[in-house]
Image (tube, rainbow, N blue to C red; front, top):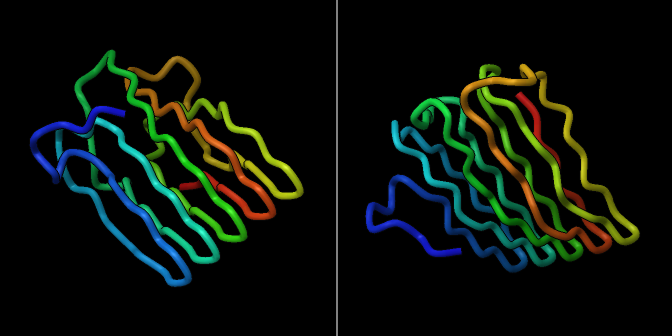
Length: 117
């Protein structure tokens, strides 16, 4: 994933045996990546926005760890992840056909990725 020049507009997290929490407030969110190995990442996007008609990608990888992503209710969430002895769950209450779309990709191995509001 090519990250934008403005670091507040993207997520770039790597956590090993610990926990990281971040809140994104950018009005031009561009996606990013999150990796959790024997640890956790908590990403709060509820105060972020993106221009209408845009879809952004958040790529995830969880190995013996977890990634929790909180999204605004006016975003559509598309889950394109896979799990091996773990879970990749989209629990977000979102509006299909919304003008803003988050595509969550990635892999969870003996860990989990969860998207919620």
